Length: 320
Ligand SMILES: Cc1cc2nc3c(=O)[nH]c(=O)nc-3n(C[C@H](O)[C@H](O)[C@H](O)COP(=O)(O)O)c2cc1C
View (tube, rainbow, N blue to C red):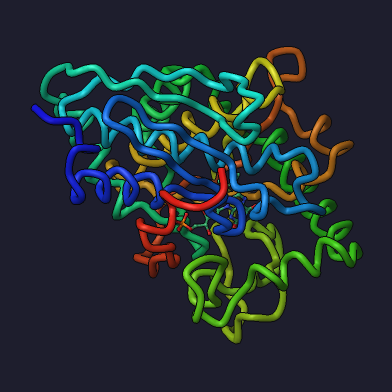
């Protein structure tokens, strides 16, 4: 069986799968080089948020999510993705991962199901119903995170209320930061671009507490709406806090999100406290067990439009 790199449509499928991943502010900060035997994933430094993401943590988490999609696409094509994170190459400073692709065998039903959800998964910033996730679904999502070397820690009661307070405090602090606001303006769009956040995906402004979605500014003309009273919040954590851990977090995030989507579960994110270094430490539910990488809201929401994507051909070229 030929590796997808041997055909134009095969290459396009790999690029399209990677390109559908979630990314901070839909910056899509990745590039790929596909050869007959391996795929190299690169960060695109021009797409890093200089104020909101000075260390490139969110960029790496985003690229980790793209890497998970890429691995799935390689499996679905009948190959085994053997992944080397942060291989360290002086000649290629932005290289994040090399995926070798020996021939393997047909994908499992689970891999096929996750792959099918790459195109349908979306960040859902609408109000969710009050229905709780069944414990077995939550358990399934936790196992998905641990398979990628991360922890998904669901918060209940006071821990959840405390975290939502931090989200609100972080939101207030960020709203007074001109650099952060300028960056937000640069990535919230009128829907004419192939990246960034058009107003149609931002959700309505929340009426009252808890404020469970990020305030992206004034681009949405929708009236305020009430969100669910008791949002289900889970924090994705990793043992370490270096670039390889961030890539692991991204892969775990995407495995969790695709599985959630397969279960009909929506997700959105409240990462505001993670954008502030001091606060990030305090929001970590298990200080000794890990570092918070994503704050995730889970639940059952209405259908939402798709955020735009750059054409696959744009991801495989340019400076690496
Ligand atoms: C590392 C990371 C951080 C994110 N943080 C937030 C956030 O704080 N608030 C939010 O609404 N969306 C957040 N997102 C979601 C992105 O905005 C979303 O993935 C992107 O706009 C593409 O849309 P899609 O997920 O519907 O494909 C985050 C995504 C990633 C990967």
